[in-house]
Picture 1 (cartoon, helix red, strand yellow):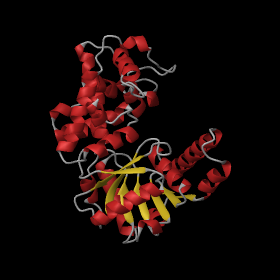
Picture 2 (cartoon, rainbow, N blue to C red):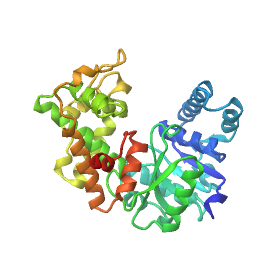
Picture 3 (cartoon, rainbow, N blue to C red):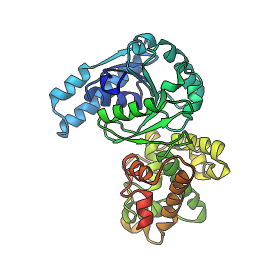
Picture 4 (cartoon, one colour):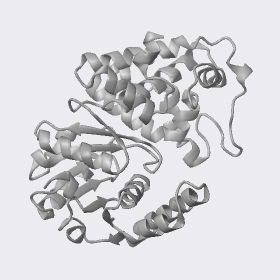
Length: 346
């Protein structure tokens, strides 16, 4: 099936990413069926879509008619066969646990049509490893959306070891039909492009706390002088320290001990202080945290910018992506003002 002929999308998982991807697909005109393991999860996902569309209407980014039409294209089910049986594209967006994903894909790939494109939204796990559970690995690919999917413009497209080039090209076209910019990752590698560079940068920032710098000092300098949308500690809190920690553990296992989670990140993870979602991480969120511009005095932003550029260079050297793809991905997926190689040229 040609990507322009795709009409129905099945989304496995109604969580933050799942319902966000469902919304994006429905707004783009696809018929969407969302599947999860409990009606409570499905109802919560539906409510999340309604709230998100409502905010877009309120801000004037979408009219009410378009929002209601998108909602009308979304259905839900507890039955995986009903979800994937006649879908043209199946996107899985369930928790980042390898065996859980494999278990879902064993069933989903058997019940999906032979010509359906099968895609995982994993942010850190190996596409090739997940594909071991899939009956047609040549049709299986990484289709990594960024949070929140309704607003973030990037989709990383990642092949597994046996993914066909036709499948990669089809998913690039489908991402663009959903209004996204697709960036092709050349090979399956931990963290792909954005998380590899961004999460490593966050970890290196946390290591500087042991060198005597204060989190407010680093955050202020990186936000106000380096032009980052948030300093690294506020960004870690926003992403969730459990997610940051889990990705770093994958990096440590796959890339070596230099990627071990920094002690401050590990300590907060162990204490259950995971950032904004729990009300406390590097900062307390009883009130909205912000850092004053003058707090950044005495911190050399090149300490972290150099590390960020070096990690981007490793991604290129390892054949994961080219420089243009890295710059595009980091600007669209991490909201950096400039890509790492644009920074280096500066």
